[in-house]
Image (cartoon, rainbow, N blue to C red; front, side):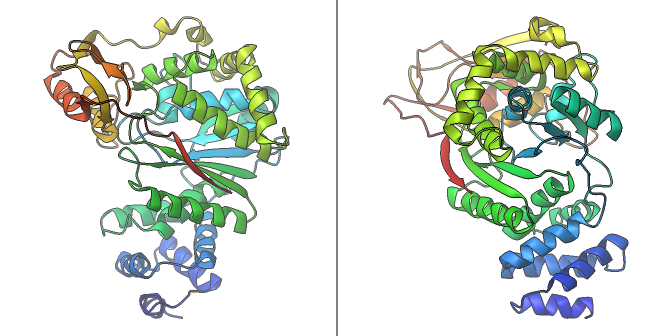
Length: 433
């Protein structure tokens, strides 16, 4: 069938077959289907949606457009974790060594960040000497020996998704559940995972702002994963305020270390234990969520999780002494307290604007070419529901410049204080399995 016929079929609400979707995606990847036709198809999908079967076929077509990572040489069930983003999302830094410390192999492919702060690799590169430039043989060896390793994403992974995402970004078709779900799941499946745990954010700092949208996206991704033979679970978590207190690369590494010591923020700790419990059950290391959580809590209490983090850093060239001496991480030249202008209770923290404030300092990338300052960022001193006195610190700005007035303004605009007490939002708002 001609491409124009497929576009017409989807425009009119028809269902595309597996073969039709495969030919369309491979044709687009190879250049025989032009951008203008793929733009028309993306818009047809945006308005007409896709059936669950179509979404699974689209995902696998994108997987087959490039390399598929073979992790069969690594012992055990490999469980991947994916977050849909947010502000202060430090979970991978905690989860990787934590679950590895109780026998869940973590063979993680991660990327760099574009936006508020760096991605997982940027954060890890705050540790002097740490690198992800390792070949597949070394990657497999490190996971088999230590239970955990992180490598950069292959340029040849899901090229169809990269090409289609760039097209969606300039054609007004980014916010399409079928296209978002297939984009995320294609990368997870191509990365070789046996099972997948999804952390789907909802709220101001999330990609999906409403719970209804987040639930729809989570359900779609879980359905795709299970249809193509990957056991998949989604946890819906609140991002109406930043996760934890730290927003910034080295600052988040320090917070991850604190969490592995059992002294981290309550919300970050709880989310990591929940996601880690799902990973542990899917890997077959524990039979129930309760048993899994007990194993994880024990590993934090007896120091095994922290020791695993040291081993992980050292194995990839990092200076593991930063775990015991966090002052050896990159440190900003200036610190500025942001005092409250009035007394009351913190009623709201606009996560997205706090993320923007961190990016203004250099903690994130405005463009792919932007250079990240690993030392800078913001550390909140208050969360929603906390009481505050006039003059008390709301946040601490870590900067390498004295020009921070705009950052102060963003923080003051982001944090609202009310006279009446406020109930903090629930961190965990749902699960789909």
